[in-house]
Length: 121
Image (tube, rainbow, N blue to C red; front, side, top):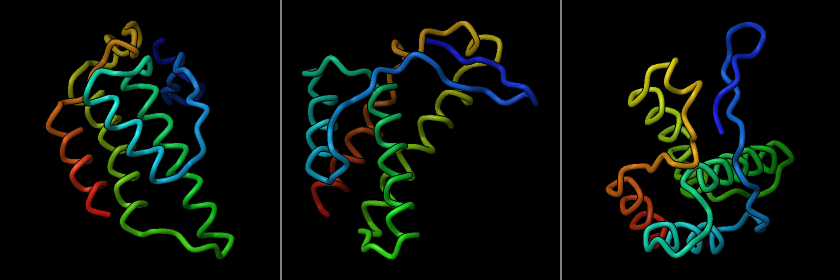
């Protein structure tokens, strides 16, 4: 579960498990609560990738003229961005190429911040 350098020098994340849950606020709450309590088989990588796909789903819905919760979309954007920022601020590219991303854990203060925001939406 590492990165692959793509043609042109980009990095492609590999190895995350799919989370087969519908994209909605309740499932985001469920996943985040379980992640915080360590009551899940999903990794922080799995969660972050699911949130990223949920974020893309929101953008696509907006583009199609469907209503989107702006606060939820902003939270999903933050989760997506913070995963990448955490990886690139914590590890050198050479390390990322060898790192098992399923072992990476986001800072607990970020998780609880998102939980607080989410439960307020």
